[in-house]
Image 1 (cartoon, rainbow, N blue to C red):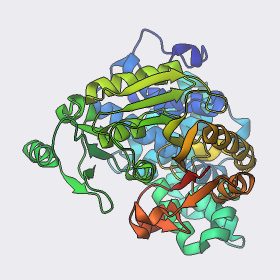
Image 2 (cartoon, rainbow, N blue to C red):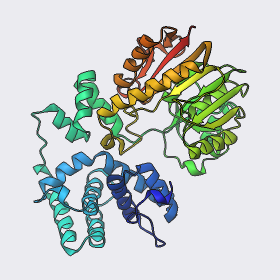
Image 3 (cartoon, rainbow, N blue to C red):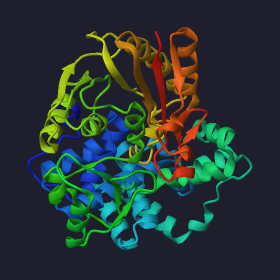
Image 4 (tube, helix red, strand yellow):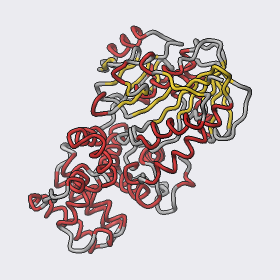
Length: 454
């Protein structure tokens, strides 16, 4: 992240901040400047050269406080005479951090959570606000039983209890029912698992497993995919040799389905229309045995540079990066196209702490127009008889089934193929790949395989 994306208030200074002050500055940036939690963590931890232990503390505090903001705010308001919104963003977030440490961080003594919060309130407020923070946190600890979330409205109750906006809860209840909605909320509020794929261009699964056992790193094999795993124990990715050497690539299982549907073959020319961050691009190169050509398109030069760096580390030699917009990009007709379309990200809310507060229901309709534009342009870039796969990291029908249905209605020379021929049938619905965290214990995703018949 570039420092120009941070305001003068949140830019770091030459002096070092402790882990709680770093967390506060990131939380301020998230709420006031639209900062992404992961970008803020990377920036501040890099600038302050924080230890791995402190980085884990900051990550937990920032992500946890952000995810559970609505529930925490409801509890704070019980012990606050004025409206929480009337406090400065600094003091609001100091209170939120304090509550999160008290309720969800077992290794933090309550006294430390209170005392450190008061210190921050003095620095980012004044004596009066420090007294307010002290009183609210101590009353919260003593009289927590006063917090009673109203149960009359199930949408409101679940929204406050699990900390999601009402429109998401309402949508999930109508589509999945209460039991699955509760499971979904639990999945999104948990720490995201770290999954990885063995890079067959450089090594074999047995070799990676032996190295992990030698390092005493616990892992689990994927239920759904060969050569995919997840870490069962804490691991420091920065110093993990098999990652730095390109023997593995951090990648969730849900990102594999579109590649399996596309089924790229050695010698083919494949267009990845929305390539960043590049995981699917690199997996396709492996499937093609480094033979043929992949055009990786993206609008961001920095993201394309990252794809190139990952390709070099992983031994991928057939990727050509191009900067451009997938809605109007032109090239010679290709054999296959992957359209990993921009979407709401409603299937990966556990990975993006701030996303639940930034997304709006109207985004689904707006994104569906962009998604259709991508599909229509891709169709024109495909050879007769060619295959294209449309995918998102969202289970929302508005940006998946409804988009594909409209596209097929307008394009009689394109047909839908059955996804169950290429992936486990348990992962498919009505010829589509569709995964749900509450059913499959993996990120929510969608993929459709399309053939250009004429």
